[in-house]
Length: 508
Image (cartoon, rainbow, N blue to C red; front, side):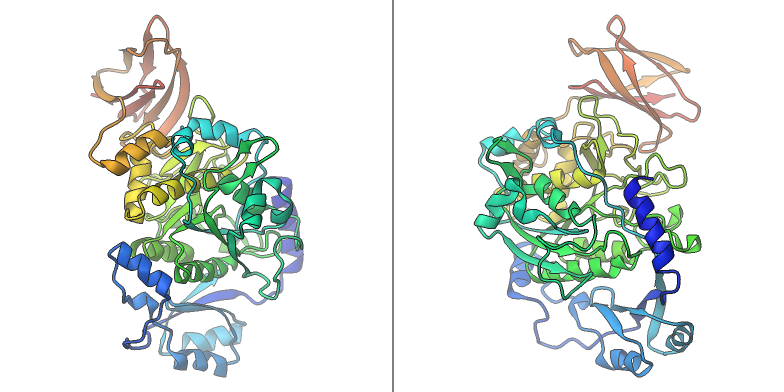
């Protein structure tokens, strides 16, 4: 556990041991539909463009009498979610008992845990990763995510106005909106700070849109986009209560016409009360409220939510993705090494019980998946600029299909590292098959594969127990033109990444 998290733990234990617990209160039904429009003109235009229903049940407001009923019990609503038909509140034990008895209350869910940002990237990070994803294909084509609305939910945005690589956003007034959901009275998110973690969102924004005019160094791909910033996590003091902040932010971003959102945060283990931690089995895309909201955003609102997979890969208590990276409809991003493209040890893996693949794709990030996610968000912004008629799910599928391991993904790195050249080609013709991929069969417990790629020296090997779940990854040397595999116990398939060639070995 890093120093930041240890500090957070100490403050949480000392400062919040006696605080009233926070809950989601979900209602049984909503106000009846009328002819009134409950969403903005920007949101209506997005739905028309994506052929989504203009009128949706999740848009309807909550029943006023239900909110009044809570108020009569002395319960103050903190945040309201139309999508979830719920409110977040703090309840003492007596109030909890009374609210449970209300006939219109469907469910009461505790809010506990914490959001985990990653560390700060190395200075050379983005130049390396831009090369890895073949970003020059976007840059040479003049794609910058121009006019694409991007939401960023994070810990804080201190330092945005003094970061030279973000100067163009300030000069051109392309930070359109910035709101603090943790301390709503704060209006200055850039030069005032509440915690030492407030810089995190500024670092993420640099990975999304940064360009240093002095070094002529491009850090992010979305240099021409418009940004809508939301501080949803305190960074030190709060617990999983930031979940409702995130949901409120994402609903507002939808109302502002934002189609693309970067979230470099995730819920996993908690500190204040171990009994209130999430369990690994709950990373199923359905349990957490934040994943439920993310799925609504993907399915009903046409939003592409890009989420860092998590940094618990080395933690034996956890290892798997945090939420909302577990939601089926989000684009979850893991971290790879720069050249070999195998998984960084800290990068969280997909649970083996999920019927779908997580993470979806990965890219180089030496210091946390927080800084892999904005790379792919910028990647998506360029595609949306070029092909605005494509839906969120089409963009997501193109990014997956452009990745170097496709179609042989796994729960360590997803489909691998996306490729801008392939993505542009696929956006023009989704039926293309661009990877040099082949299948072979092997018998027994050993197999020697004759490498056809000239000059190949090493191969990343993913030993798998089924189509997705990795038992072990390793780096093997090509000897006399061959890679020699030894079958692991329970191994049924093996993926060989030889650089320009991908081989799927089926064991018989």
